[in-house]
Image 1: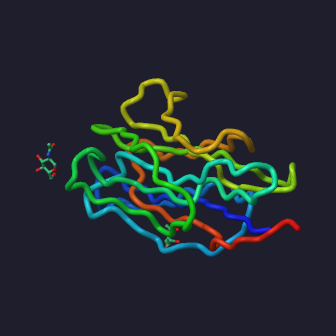
Image 2: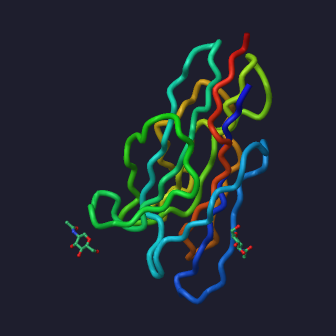
Image 3: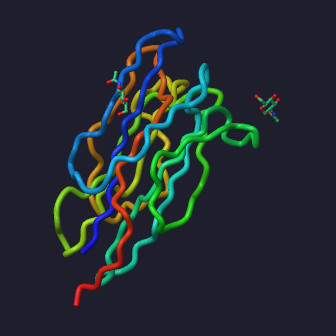
Length: 181
Ligand SMILES: *[C@@H]1O[C@H](CO)[C@@H](O)[C@H](O)[C@H]1NC(C)=O
Ligand SMILES: *[C@@H]1O[C@H](CO)[C@@H](O)[C@H](O)[C@H]1NC(C)=O
């Protein structure tokens, strides 16, 4: 059975562009697949919106891959001139809703992960929540349109004060079709 997984490394840049980069990585619940390329937003821009590539729930007998890609927008996601970055993206699924923190920026994330085998299929990362800099309530988030059927929300990863997400690296297993029979 194939497994698709996706783990994020997000680099943080200080308000001051020469401030040191830090990486925040989601807890390593699964370790399938190759790490994709590390992509960063253009200098002096940071992630202000996101979009998920998700494969819908396929049913019990089909191998699910769930979240297959994350796109970060380096600016207003609804402005056509805004560049975006993706790291590696799996073949299956469709890009969903575009979510925006603009004019704020992304300052943290949380992944919904299925850590171990339950119904005979593992989907690894299923959904993602994002925290925006302009929310005074730190518990407020934007939840993506991934799948919430499986797994649990993991640890919240947050930038330090005055830092924002400006890069991404994902781990996705190549799509392979396998039959259970
Ligand atoms: C962050 O991760 C990237 C990509 O893996 C790596 O090139 C960079 O050296 C890391 N930075 C730090 C400060 O660990
Ligand atoms: C879109 O972004 C460009 C480049 O930052 C900016 O010049 C332009 O005013 C923006 N357009 C809108 C409609 O916000």
